[in-house]
Length: 54
Length: 382
Image (cartoon, rainbow over all chains, first blue to last red; front, side):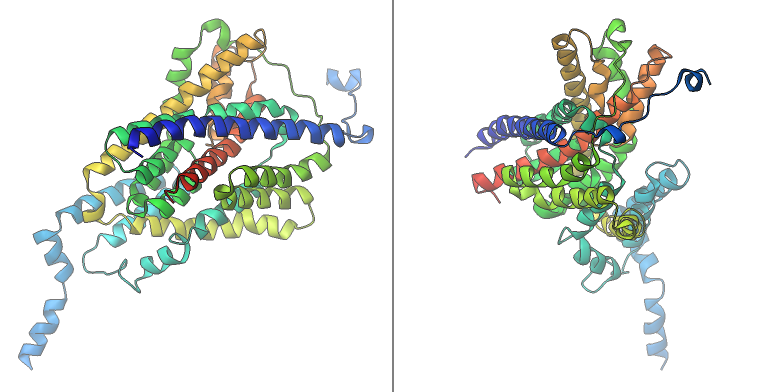
């Protein structure tokens, strides 16, 4: 394989592989968030107006 | 008797005699080592790395000291942790223990910014090949664009050990120069209206279980797709799992403090040990520094252009400036985006979004290196 074939192959497969891997990871994180949602008691408490004014 | 005294005296000062008669490369490298020490100690440029690298460089360029010969102190450090890639991996455990992936988990799509921020690596690979570097050396040089010191060291030590010194110094120097390199590119590629786009604040939506499972899932997914990068991803995610599980605080603290500190010292000294004058002062060194600069600039260009694309696709909900944070220099790149955002609109706080893109860049740089190594393996080149 000549070096230009190597370079172009590496660029196409490399960029596509990196995007594909990270896109898959983002989908998996979405799934994790749906499977393990933040429970009510873990959510930050709503601030009272008086506290916000401070 | 007199002859033996004279013979003994000739040993004293032999290094000085060598330096002034045939040691010009060493003299130049002593100046380089001094410059690195000055930048680290007085200018606060990546001092944790540049101080030991600079001192190692000074040590190895004192003639006849044999520190990098078999059995020498610096050679022993090199063999113990760089030749077998151990040191960068131990540092990765510490980085994983220090990194909060929270902003990334709040908005997982921001991971794609971490992919866009690696495009410069692949473009630089083409440039390095055009300059005549062999395939494996070109790959090692291109990884400077990951803006990720341990990854650059890992790849270089494995596939281009003869270039380890210049690649390491270039990687860490350019990481420190991110606040200077990025802003002009960010300004040139964005319109005034794009720079002042305000993004919605991130809502807390990630459960502790998701945070705990994230490092395991990332390790499995990336390991299955690009197994050659598993040592890199596995160690950074081990550190992060220890951080999130919360039951091994001693190990977490040791990883991000004692282990990372000791290994950083040894790593820096050993890298400095590779900067012996005759080996370092070559035209290829200048080419590596030039290509490293190009790589990081192209990463920024690709990141901001990707940000503009996402901005268009979302109807103007994303500020393209955060694209510049899709590199691995954490948290420097995120801070640059925050500073630039505030420069154009004093109430526009982009830090959390930029931090998400920046941690995406950390994952992205390791994924890009892993993909490259796995493709090389697939081609039968390694």
